[in-house]
Length: 483
Image (tube, rainbow, N blue to C red):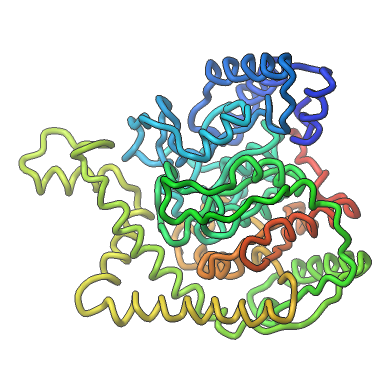
């Protein structure tokens, strides 16, 4: 049962080959048995899962037949879940039980999904390796000595290890796509505003976006269908009709114009990954796609711009965690200033403290114009590059990451080295574009991803291309040894 995709589960439940309750029990037992190796879950919700599974079975018995009805998933632990710990991977929120459900959680619950638990993540989504979590590092099921990527590494590791078929995740600078690449999954960051951020604990509000992590493009289409849509509670949510993503998977790629930026293949890219990307291009050409070299001249400025904007927004968003209203509070504060200082010093880990400090500096008097304002101008130039490119091509293709997953601890002493691993993913967040990573092969036994980017609200186009590619390749079907 654990090898089934979301689509296969939907068909099995519809054909009454098994019940949601039976499937849920199998997966909960599997998580209990195997997750100690991975550390991919922060909280398991066995009682809730079995309750939701029984309810889904009852709805099916009454004639309902939705694609997500009875499907087991997990939520990244920054989506608020009523009455359940929502920790954001931080000591600061270790004791926080959300008083309400995030919109994504409530929408998926209404569709009939079964929540198995909350997955581990980099603290407050700050990281590319899932090593900054207060609950310990997550291990990559393809090699337990390597990172699974971050910040959605818990969701990625759990799905890759077949502990469950799919999970929710979030992407601020690549945190869905990079873990997908490192663990041989398909991960989709939707257009900014496509999925509600209400109840999603913020890191950088103008960059964060929720999306699906699964083994196939078809499964991502099914999960995104349940997540997407306008939400009046979220001022950044966009009132745009949500298409039937699954219905668009089988469109022909004949004549599809694929742009390949020359800047993607410079120094810094592992040549073995470059070869795998070229192989992916050849597969898509066989399906009728037309390849064109393009340029994204301002890509070189994206990382410095991102690492000013994101910490600036983080320093503002995380100011609410002060030990007064909720979250960690220090013991016996002497006065209000001591309460703030010690609660925040004890509650936040080193990476979060680093980014708060960088962000506060960039926003301070005398530096705002030099750093934050200039970074926002670069952001506009990056967006303009994409708009010009999409006048010539339908999608943009390249590597998801410059290197395969690194060993645990290898970049801990050099945060900037980890930041540079986001070079191909952060531009989509700066511009608000949808992006998808899909499996493209292996280097030294570790998975590699190919990234696709599309114009605004063209998630369906990305899913169509990925699905057609997956019908003609088998990378996405490979399973890590031991799982």
